[in-house]
Image (cartoon, rainbow, N blue to C red; front, side):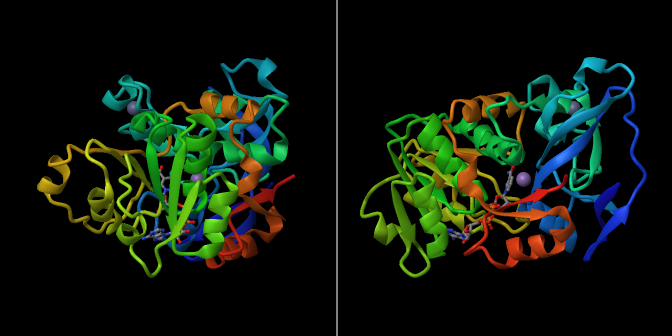
Length: 336
Ligand code: NAI
Ligand code: MN
Ligand code: ZN
């Protein structure tokens, strides 16, 4: 089989590898589609602190179960499945409180273990979720990015009367817009980005107001509107202090970033408004929820996709994804 391997930071190769055998509790999936995420690019460039090399990348993928390992029902062969990349131990403290995404032995498929930019992958059977026929093959790899929005929304508990502000209209911001509008019926979703093309995408994905903050700060553009729910999907460390300053008293702020640089906020700025800060990493068992959202057409994954390319063009596809955020949002790789 062919696999996209980051041999070491900076070195991407398409390698011929032996067909992997599913171990106990695992299934082998013949992969049909996989989508590119910023973290794949980070692993390629050596900027992901969790990655170990060599690594088959890709954590957003869809395919058909082709073989079942010991202990897995043979009837699962033939299922169309999307794969939750979060592999957890099931018994540590975070697992015991329903937070497998921060398991003390967390293994992320495509980061800590081999992923889906490959003809085949072996994954724990319980991570493979059946995709109903109403979700087409070419969109099923997008379930995973929407689970990020589902997870942060589970903390933020959006309501229709919220005034929401989203920083960043990349894939993460766009999934958040779609969830806030389509699932939670938030009436007023404001989105800030520095790129006009990304703001156009935000509008197409349902934003009510878009603001270009490349020159004029948001405080001047919001004209006294105080967001009650803020999501930082741009993840620059300076954004937290800005969000805190803009927030309404009693607002909730959701953070998604992984920067190692400090964010500078005072206790006074947080406590005087009694702000709630939530962080969210990957997802905790949110695949069934997102699959339901897609089945009911509450969200439109096709609005994120700007390119379909074959797996053989993965390096060009990842370069386009990285270098051209004005024309490129989600790239879906056709594997087979
Ligand atoms: P992206 O880079 O495509 O999008 C970020 C957007 O923010 C860009 O359109 C950029 O122009 C905009 N931006 C940058 N600075 C800004 C500012 N000060 N104000 C407004 N907009 C600004 O990235 P993507 O894929 O959407 O991911 C966003 C972030 O989410 C990344 O930092 C990534 O690490 C993080 N992430 C976190 C996850 C989690 O589970 N916690 C999962 C996936 C991504
Ligand atoms: Mn992703
Ligand atoms: Zn655990």
